[in-house]
Length: 275
Ligand code: 2NE
Image (cartoon, rainbow, N blue to C red; front, side, top):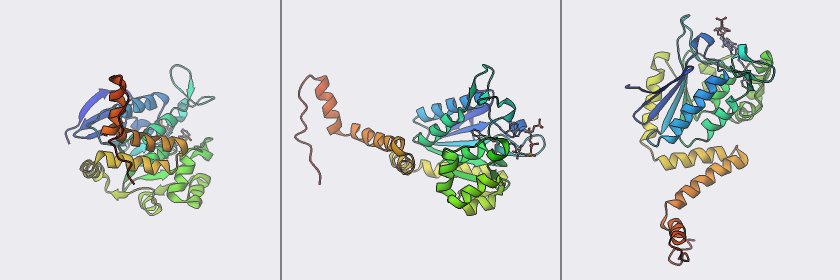
């Protein structure tokens, strides 16, 4: 694939090819753990991909293998910069800014596919979880560690996990902090498919290309509909935003604006009150 670098960052790689953006967490020496800076960079790249109307699918992955031969998607928050009230960057401010990133990935109206090779652990597990689809390599390992390392994600990390794998399994995952292999993840419905690690990116591109053949508005309405079921008023806002978008695209919606600009009363009389 002919990947073009969009912008150079310190902790991530950001590339695009025809219709597809690829965002790679690039801290393999830390199993791709994120610090606040990593998350700010991820957020910026996701915003760029969201704003680019040529991009329909975003692949999120981790750089690897590391020099020790091991792979990681992401091992969660970088515990070495975890301070008194959150993860601390050079400015000394404690943060949990990965929560902003989770909401962005979930709400942006394009398809986000996690490509997981090796560890998706802790906050890294939650990141794959909130992506629309997950393709796992056969060496993928999934799990939460919060109760072991003094943390927890009671947001999407708990409730959305339970929507996906069921209450019993979600409680097992969090309460016991075990690790699960790719086959077990597939059986739980935690991932969409499992492929040999060397095929992971090719499979992601194949899925992306199939999606790119489909109708962008149908896909964005479906994503917001799936979200609305779990996301309360924020979910309804997304769904309703799509209704507004479609309304703006009608002559009827346009008549209101046109009348205002022409300083005349709107004429909606010709538009039908459909059954
Ligand atoms: C991922 C895992 C299971 C891999 O184990 P292994 O044995 O393959 O590698 P190792 O030796 O543990 O790790 C390799 C290097 O990466 C660093 C390690 O410290 C080690 O560094 P060196 O000793 O070579 O210098 N590393 C790995 N993960 C790191 C991390 N998260 N932070 C900083 N350095 C890390 C194993 O490494 C592991 O269990 N990692 C920790 C997983 C974890 O507990 N993550 C945090 C969960 S909490 C969280 O993410 C979170 C949240 O709960 C709520 C909101 C936001 C975030």
